[in-house]
Length: 106
Length: 106
DNA sequence: TGATTATATAATTATTCAGTTATATTGTAA
DNA sequence: TTACAATATAACTGAATAATTATATAATCA
Image (cartoon, rainbow over all chains, first blue to last red):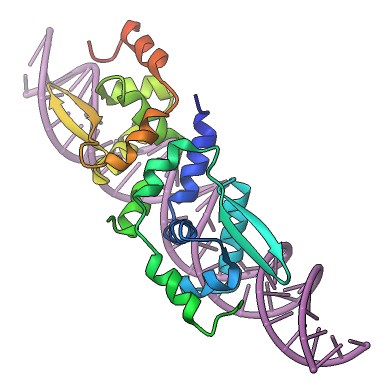
């Protein structure tokens, strides 16, 4: 059974519109910071700080490749979030639109 | 599909240790405010304010009977929380201990 | 090398929020 | 009616936090 402190900390990370949108976008595919900036229409430091929290909470993992940092979901050890994640509002359109942009990292 | 604003607001309610404990306790049975005060070892106004937020967020419903207000879970319209709720740390012992106390509402 | 790009960190600010204390409301019982 | 018990609300305080601005780090490229 889960410790209630850890669980409430994890859910606190989900209880923010920006982070929830990030996580939903990452359901589509891994994304780098500049893509997330584009998707969320917010500043780069804002995204970076949210990613740091999500990483600290074990919800995402990062992969540095060249000058980019790609983030992806890390949910293997959190089966209790599966159903919830399946219900997250889709960010598919926004993610696909980023691909077609004069993107930051192509 | 869910609106991300509503969903993050709901998850924000879950991202608090006190409220998460309350919700887990309510899985056992409906509870009145004074029982929750006993279970959580906190003040009555603190419980009342959390219950107001949970009620506003549609996570609990209340039933007034005599001078007591009983709260119970209201999850029928939130299937996406089912799996999560099943994984909440059990509060069974604490809830049962309340019954044996010189309780507030027997 | 120096310039540029991507990302992270630090410092700051304004807001949100949990918990406390004090008070009000509501219902019950003497 | 008055006294009491359960709950709610209001006001306040301190801590947490999201976002901004400015700066630092790190990698790539000319």
